[in-house]
Image: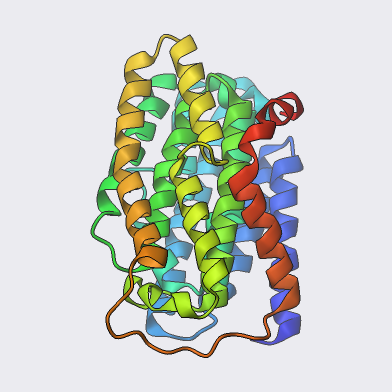
Amino acid sequence: MNPQANLIFIISLLLGTTITISSNHWIMAWTGLEINTLAILPLISKSHHPRAIEAATKYFLTQSAASALVLFSSMTNAWHTGQWDITQLTHPTSSLILTSAIAMKLGLVPFHFWFPEVLQGSPLTTGLLLSTIMKHPPIALLYMTSHSLNPTLLTTLAILSTALGGWMGLNQTQIRKVLAFSSISHLGWMAIIIVYNPKLTLLNFYLYAMMTATIFLTLNTIKVLKLSTLMTAWTKIPSLNAMLLLTLLSLAGLPPLTGFLPKWLIIQELTKQDMAPAATLISLLSLLSLFFYLRLAYCTTITLPPHTTNHMKQWRTNKSTSIMIAILTTMSVMLLPISPMILTIV
């Protein structure tokens, strides 16, 4: 792709995200979402592969339907209350439609079918954008309307997402699909707590985005897309593979790594809200996703195939990317000891 065109699309993505998260009016938020959708489509389909074109088509159709529902929800609310302010979403029907629209935008169960297919058809760098930046505006809308959302509906969606995200990721061999189901599972954790403690959802999202960015950038550096090639990739940059192991375990939420922090706080908050059964259920369901993270971690560093593909060691790597991966990996693994400081900031 033309570098200038690529730059325009990236700037448009940042612009759309900024417009949505900083607006108070529903029409402006909707405009930001539309700019985002239109800017990511060329980045998904830039390889001109039939699978990439299919992914872009699926993405366009689902996001258009979700945007139409967002507009319909805000118009219904404005019709009944006379308010276009995002925080004044008080009509129950509007709230229900908005929850469905944002679940579709994010890829929550039962609107999750498009996400693994789109991620599988996209390059790794575009997959990183889809899993992190593209989820920020819908999460921001949920945050702003959290006081008027239906807790029962969100808890149901969250538990189903954690269950299906873990269950469907078990038999995958394509790493991008595994990361897509991992994303669905993590969104379940974010959705269950949004009504009770919205700031915890944002903290969970930021830490998830940081760990996912580390994994995508690492996979992009060692050029790996499947489990079978991951097994032989350890000879390229052994130290990077060792850090990928720790990042995967952190994403799984194992102590004493960074990923344990949001899960610990969410379980604590749910227990305070007299939702111990939900906390127990979602914790048990996260064991499903732990299995496929361990599988990835096992293939990354512990497997030593009998016939190793001999790779030339990379004596020269992209310096800026290497520095970014180093910083993100350190943060993905070692933030738990400073959690009191993080909580005072949040």
